[in-house]
Each structure stands twice: as structure tokens, then as C-alpha cells.
Length: 167
Image (cartoon, rainbow, N blue to C red; front, side, top):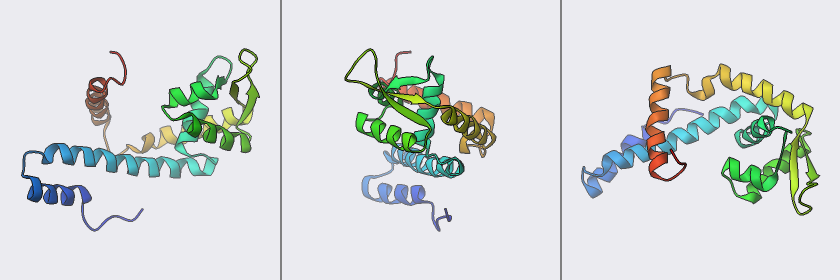
């Protein structure tokens, strides 16, 4: 990704201040910075995962499946845990199935449900991809460990306020 000629957050902040005054610019700039950072990080992570045939959402699904006792989850439950709509979870699983990283199998407990089950190939690619992401500090290498912890703490406060989880 080529660097932009201007800082889009600073430019948005300038326009915002001209239109709305100085008071709300701190929150607007913070939100815009978070959204821009998310775009940058997702691009970095997807670039790191590309050699493994993965995108970040597909990687997350594989890792989640690898954490389960039997390496499988109902697709609906997978979507819940990934915090995506069931349709998105189904698309992720279909792509992983096409690549041989998971299998879709009928649930023995619920005849209506389909399970996503990680394959040995899926486990291997998840391990290799995880190593690459760890080596690249998940795209956050520009921040020191204390800054990364501070960022996590700051965003945790925001998530708590939004009711994202119970403390």
C-alpha cells in the first residue's frame, strides 16, 4: 500500500473543526484513527496470510476450531464466536472446505446443524500462519509491548462500556 500524500485523519479533523468547532474533534479523530488503523492492520494481516491461502477471517475460524476439544463446532456457533452473521460463517467454512482445511459434516446431536471440523491440513496451515503472525507481531511491530498493552487496556474500557462482555 503506497503512503498517502496527506494524513487523512488530520485532514478530516481540520474539516470537522471548521464545520463543527474544536470541541468534538478529539472523539472524531480518535474514531477515524481506529477505523483507519483497522483497515491498515487487516491489509497487513491478509498480506501475511496470503502465502497460506488464508484471509484473516478464515485464519480466525481455523484457530477457533483448533482450540475446541474435538476440532469442530456447529457453523452457527462458529459465527457467534467469530462475531459474524451465520451467512458469513457459512461462506468462511465453504472456502476453508474448498481448500481442504475443514470438512462440513452433519451433526449427530442435531440433524439440522452442520459442523465445521478442522482437518490435519487445516491444523498445519493454522500453525504455520500463526508462526508468521507471531513473528510479525500481528502487524503491530511499530508499537512497543507497553504501547500494545496500553492500547488493549484502552479498547477494553470502550468494549466494557458497550456491553461487549461482562467484566
